[in-house]
Image 1 (cartoon, rainbow, N blue to C red):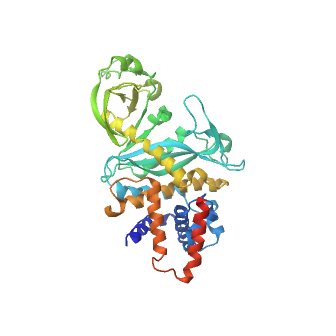
Image 2 (image 1 turned 135 degrees about the vertical axis):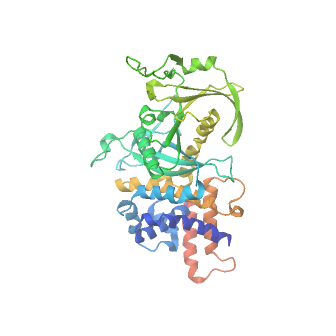
Image 3 (image 1 turned 60 degrees about the horizontal axis):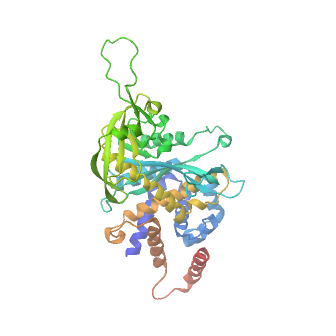
Length: 434
C-alpha cells in the first residue's frame, strides 16, 4: 500500500505536465522520467531506456528524438511546473522567494555544442581560478520553508537558460551575459505570476544596475554589496517651484566599511542554515549611485557578535524589508548551491551526454526538471511516509526506487514470465554501481 502511494505521487506530477506535450510525446516523457530516476550510472539515453524497463515501449531512437527533434517547448514545461504544481501545492499564497545563480556541467569533446572553458566553482579558490570544458547555465530556484520542515529551505529548480559565447549566437540568437539572462528569467517568471509578490536573491555577481533598475513592478531584489561601495544619502524632496537642476543624490556618506566602523548595531536572532543565530545589524536607506543610480536601497550591515569574521554587506530594493528578513533571505540562497550539488551527484546534471545543439539545450534542464519532480512528489506524500526530518535528494530517490522494485518483485515467488525482466534490471543495476 505504501509503495503504491509513493509511485502514484510521482506519476501524478508527471501527468500534471502532460499538457505540455502531444499525446505520443507525453508517453515518451513519462518513460524517460522513470528511467532517469531509476538509472544508477551515467544517464545515456540507452541506459535510461533500459532502466525504464516495461515502461519503455518504443525503440531507443524515439527517446533520442525526444531530446533532439521532438516538438515541445521547454519554457512551457517550466511554466506548468511553477503555475500548476509548485504554487498550488506548496506555496498557494504569500511572497514567492526565488534564488538565481549559474553553474557549469562538465563536458568532453570539441564537438559539444555551446561548450567552452568556464570557471569551475567547486575547484576554484579566492586566489586561483580553475577552468574546465563545460556548458554554463543560469538557473532559477524557488525557495520554500514548508510547515512540516520549518528550519529547512527546500530549493526547487523552476527555470534554466543556457549561456552562450558570442560566437555561438547564430540564427538570430542574441548574445546575452549571465546578468542579462538572469534578468530575463526574472521577467519571465514575473509575467507568469503577475498577481504575486516576488523576492529574488542572488550573490554579489548579479549586483548590477541592469538588474536593479529594470525589475518588474512586482519584484524586489536582495544581494550582496562590495565593502568599498561608495554610498550617498537620499536627496531631500524637491520643493515645488524650485529652480535649477534637480538634485539626484544627497551628501556623500563614504565607503561602506568606513560607515560600519562608527555605526550603531542592534542585536537580532535570525534563522540561518537551519539554526537560530544571534547577529548584530545596522540598517539604513541610501543611494548606491554608481550601480543603482537614483533608486533608493535599504542597506544592511551584518556583524557576528563574537567577531573573528568580516562584516557582511547586503541591500534590498524593498525599503520596508527588515534587517532580519534580509539576513534570513540571503542565507536561504544557499539552497540553490545545495540543489546544484544534489543534481550533479544524484540526478546526472554533471554528466549529461548529448552533444547536438537541441539536445544540449534540453538534457541538462531535463535533469533539473527531474530534481524538481522528485522533490515535489516526496513532499506531497502523507506525513507517515515522508518522515519527520527533511531528507536529502538521494534519500528521496531511494524511496522511489525501492517502492518501484518492491511493486515488481513478489516476496513469495517470481512468475516465470517476469524472471528475465527482473534479471535484466539487476544486471543494469549491478553494472551501474560496479
